[in-house]
Image 1 (spheres, rainbow, N blue to C red):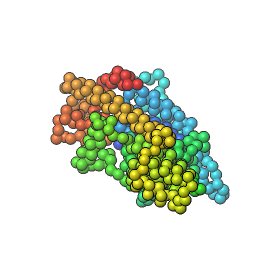
Image 2: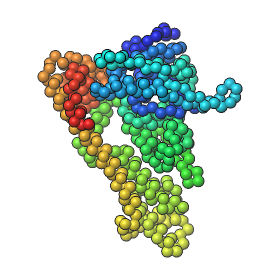
Image 3: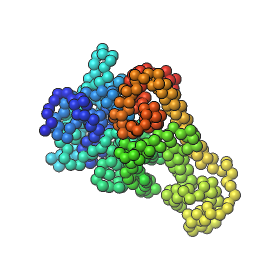
Image 4: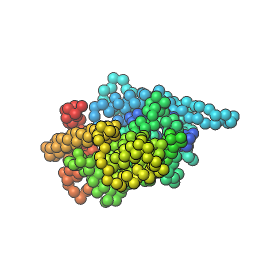
Length: 461
């Protein structure tokens, strides 16, 4: 049994990166609550400091450097305030669990996450904060023997949406149970995410803003891949969704020489000069779903939404739109068409005159919206690329100008999460040229010169 202590620091437990919590419908994983991303990082860092043998909570000291290292963040002067504010907000955050008690009745139980968050007063150099779990969380975090979620928090280092984090936790638990698909009602998802009726009231908005973004986020940044999200309808209304998922390898989870190549390729593709020619997964999904919704709305009485989606996967949008327009025109003129869906399919494969632009401007508008979103994303990525290249030039020149920095920079880059990607057969300068090593390289330079990037980052704000 772990020796009880009143204060625990990460240095007391080593580099543990595993979080554990009670799962299932009566656990934290599917309880009702909301945290922003910074609050989740504070919470997950605390979880990594719990030992499986602990029988009680203690006070946990969190350092900014610990959270930055765990989630591969870039350091700036606002990190401490951001983490302190998040910890203080967690004191007022609660989760809601519905469960049956010993009397056989169903109860709604509200449980706070933290009892306290303490920061030093008047110490401008302090970069730590002390936090304490609420005692009511003991059954959900301590002495877990069954039905619990265990995952490496570093898998969420690239996720920047609270809903993506929640979906990851839910699906990761199901995958740990050897499941490759799981069904959730829309009502259940709204409840877990704590999304009320007034927020994203239409399913289409909920799908675009929450579900699709979370799926794309997980596919791009975590070790879970959503292969398919299938909608179940009841009276033409989406009542449930089924997630089909599988594991995917990330540089974080690779240990062989191939991982280095994969990591470099992913980093280089992110910084590629051809970014403007690539559409993001989210933009592509938005464009597809917008157009499907618009086209399907005009023929919903004849075919299902999935049929329209299948048409668009096989044929250009203009062909599908023209076929639908032509078929509806025939029906309006009194033609008898027994199988409207089959007729549209036939017309898709038939050369038809183009529909005038003013006949269906809504479809064109939605495509334009999706393209604008893609352009905005590409502009953001181009801006980030330019900032990264500027930081690298500054850091590289400083490294050349300060030979005494070589050893501490090398030591920092060889330690921590990305240390496995440091190629000891190459020189220090060759390693810092690798995009996958930019993060630890910049961090090491900032440690030696804390204000080195302040001016260029302020220019970007």
